[in-house]
Length: 303
Image (cartoon, rainbow, N blue to C red; front, side):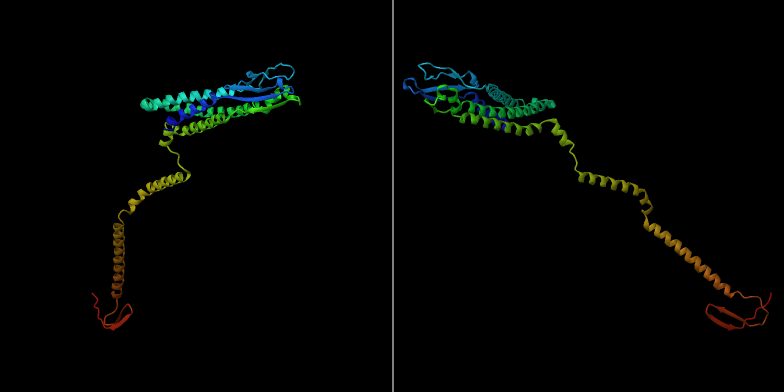
C-alpha cells in the first residue's frame, strides 16, 4: 500500500524540486571612476546546470568597455540522471498501482508478475541510491561554482585593489537541498518495498512450504527416528512376553512337578528303610526311621 500511495508522491516531489529550479545571484562592481561602475550584475542559472554556458558582462573599469565571463562547471549529467530516475519511478509506480487494483489475478498468475515486479523494484532502489548520491555531490559543486566569492574572482576589475566588488544577493538552495532529501526518501521507500514484493514471489512461498529446520530440530527429529527404530526392533521380542502369566503358570507347574518327584523319591527312601534284610526266624530286628529308633520283636517266616 505504501508503494501505491507514497511512491508517486515522493517521485513527483523529487523531480519537481530539482528539474524546476531556477536561481540567480547579483554582484556589484564599483570602479574608481564612479561613472564606470556597475552596481547590479545579475547572473541566472537553472536546471540542468550547464554553468559553462552561463555568462555575464561586467565593466572593466577602463573606459566603458565590458568583458564576457562564463561560469565554471557542467553538472547536467548528475542532475538529468536524478530527474530521469524520478520520472521513470513515477510512471512505473502508476503502472503498478493500476495492476495491483484492476489486474490482481493476472499479476499473480504464473508467478511472472511478482518476479518482474521484484526485479524492477530492486533496480529502482539501486538507481535511487546512485542518483541521489551523484546529485548530492553535484549540488555541492554547483554551490561552489556559484559562490559569490568565486564569481567575483573571475571579474578582472575585482582583482584590482582600487575597485570594490561585493555580492548583493546570493542564490537560495533550500529547494535543491529538498530534492536531495526526497531522493534518499525514495531510496528508503523502494528498498523497504523489496521485502513486500519478495513475499509475493514463488521463492518466498517455496521457502515457507519447506522451512529450514534448526540444529535442535534436526537433533530432536533424529532422536525420534532412533526411538522409532528401536521400538520396531524390540517389537518381535515382545511376543515372548505377551503372556507372562502363562509363563509363570508353566514355571509353577514344572516346580510342582519337581516337588512331587522330590516327594516321591523321599517317600521311596522312606519305604526303603522298612525293607528288612533276610534274617533268621525269631531274631529280634531293630527298625529305625529318621531320628526315631524303636525296638521290637518281629518274627518273619521264610516261605
